[in-house]
Image 1 (spheres, rainbow, N blue to C red):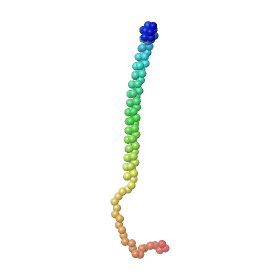
Image 2 (cartoon, rainbow, N blue to C red; image 1 turned 180 degrees about the horizontal axis):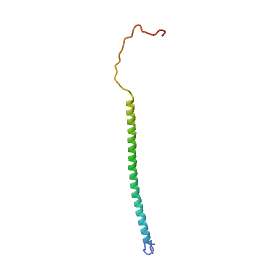
Image 3 (cartoon, helix red, strand yellow; image 1 turned 180 degrees about the vertical axis):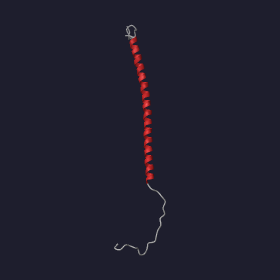
Image 4 (cartoon, one colour; image 1 turned 90 degrees about the vertical axis):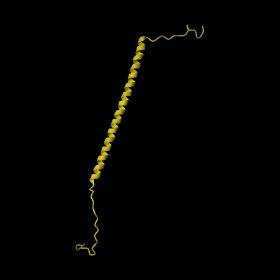
Length: 96
């Protein structure tokens, strides 16, 4: 009897048909769960990007609105400075 004698090697029993079906079902469910998680993550990333874009557009719009309101709050016009000579004897009221 040698070590490599095929009669002395312990043989594993083949799994039953129920165990094979169970492993297949678990594998298919695990694969389906991974695919579902991938698509859920992709949808969440797209939704997050859309929300971020909407938020940034809203902030830009409010800043633009505030800037325009600030620009229109000041009265701007053209004017000309006229210098007059000072009179030598100003006419001040008595007691001043």
